[in-house]
Image (tube, rainbow over all chains, first blue to last red; front, side, top):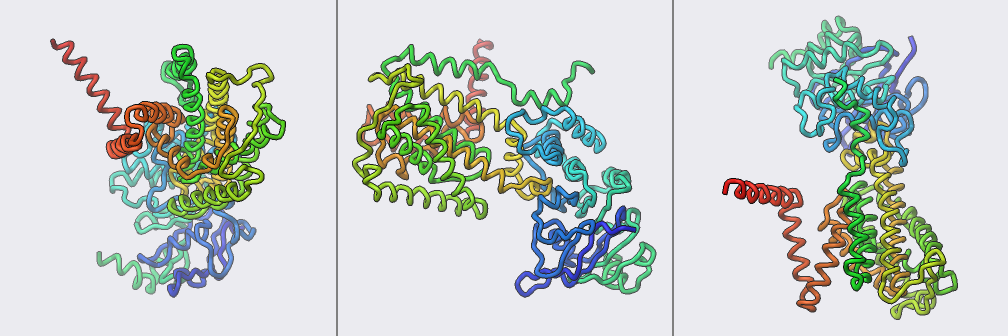
Length: 250
Length: 330
């Protein structure tokens, strides 16, 4: 089994605080890998390090064997490492169609085209429309993003990442804030992701994690506590104590 | 089903040329024949409009605030002025060189604006304009210092149309340049590159996450904007046959910001409409109250910003609706 994404002894300090503490993580190609941990465990910091929003204080990151530790955020995206955000990060004044057309054009290195009208390449627009249809956003694709209901915005958040054709997709709490009755839309979308795409899922919702993931890493206080298959983690007394036990009391 | 436009058509539709735009440009040509005595004023408006258009490219589309845009206007004016002084009086050659020189200055300084908040950018742009002003003041042997550049000889446009005293050639020349550059700007903001600028301005974090390098896009638009401003400066130098330190003065940077805010940021026509309103208001108010016209400009600006263009537009619409509604009821 080849390795899609790996960190080696990754450390991030914010002043005196160590948000990421010697994390060495290996994610196999095609895996459905969940990253769980209590609030403040450093999950989002780790995502920010992986995607290049933050620079690590120490350690390295490899994507399909290449060292990407020093690559910029957009260069990593061009190599197929794409993320979604826990809090929607969308283009509020643009329509979903415009947003996706842009993402598709950027993937084809046409983002600098300053002469032809945006969307003049029919192939790109068709691709954008296909993705929107798959996410149930076709009916609202010409509306301003800021006017969409939250659930639709959450779907667009993922659709925008899919338009970048990820090889490794990092999902930061994709179902955050989505009401119970709309969750199935997100869950269906995640289940339908192509099998060759490696998915790393950060999630609080344990039902979602256990139904989706085939492997789980547990992060506590910035360090990797343990890692294993779903059953293994569910049975692990250490994990139950720090994490599952905690949420069981809620 | 065949009646509903496809996504492809809908994307293209956003850049469609509208008949109101043709009307706008025909009118701006027509005013010359209606009011030939005002040609000099009109050419001032066209130049101010181009200058404000250049600011709109970075502010309205790139999200970069600047209080030093006069730097590029001034550099362009001096470039064209010096050429005309030293025997290279062809206007179009002057524009090209002014654009190139201003673009170089814009490109070099753009890297100082990539990081930092709006406040940092305001201060950096202001600082650069101040430095250029002082440089022009010190290098009096080249620029003429406080006395201004003496002895410019501007040739006829295309070797055919000499500048006349009444400003007719000046206006047609300035309007043509404005129109061509407007078309170019319009093309650019509706392109994929233009869309990517909107994305960077709207959410730089997400723009990076879909593979856009925000820095390189901002450098590109800032350089282009500087070139446009340089051309505006060159037009000013050529049509007035005058370049003084005033072209680099702080008030010019502030004025162009004012003009753009009056006309509305981020739709290209804002700069031109703002220039029309600002210059006409200035001309009219200066006739009534020569010393206090800035008071009234200030009042209009405060009202515009506090009330906002959207609400003024909506207010006018509802007023029109009410009047026509009353008309039909009576």
